[in-house]
Amino acid sequence: MTQGSTGMFLQLGRIFIGLLAESYRHRFCFRQGFWVAALAVDVFVGVVLVALEAPPPVLLVPFLGLVALTVALGTRIRATRISKMGMLALISRFKPSTHVAESPSIDQRHAVIRSIRRDPYLGQRVEPRSLERLSKKQAETLLGECTARAVVYGEIRVQGDAYLVEGGICLRPPAAPGGARAGPAPPTRHVPLEEDGRPLRELVGTPEANYFGVIRAELLNLAVALRV
Image (cartoon, rainbow, N blue to C red; front, top):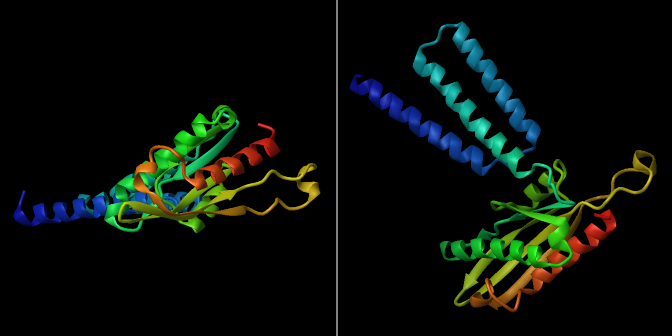
């Protein structure tokens, strides 16, 4: 293998890693139909290049794109698959404002999930499923095209030995009795979540943050309305 071809393959490798990382990072930024269409276009381009007898290095590009798009679509479908419990709630990792908030953002997600699972009612009826960080728009988009009834998102900041949270929970209320004849589906509800200046040591301990109670209360009301 010549030095030129080695450099070309290294460059293709970097492109592939970049495609894989960006596809995974943005898998919830677009609707599922976008990823399906992108996958179909990539396959079509690959078939055309094969028909034109393109050289192997050129054929490698759509193949790498195929792998990246398949990973993005596959992980998205897996994260939003139907729950075996009565109701699915997606709990995203809150976006850390700085690198100092990286670890607290992970602890926060685990703490919310643990709080739901320990609730006597919700623990038997709601499956809290972990996701990476989402924006409000991404949460609303995701809620509109999967079986989840609630999506929690937000941002966490650390100031000294305290943390601050700002986010929300998007909820999809049940449709009115009568199905489509009863009118359009009810709009998505949005409930803000806030926590200001709570000690970091309480993030994984007790007493629980106030917004944990808000999340549980909203999930409880929704579960009762759905009769799960």
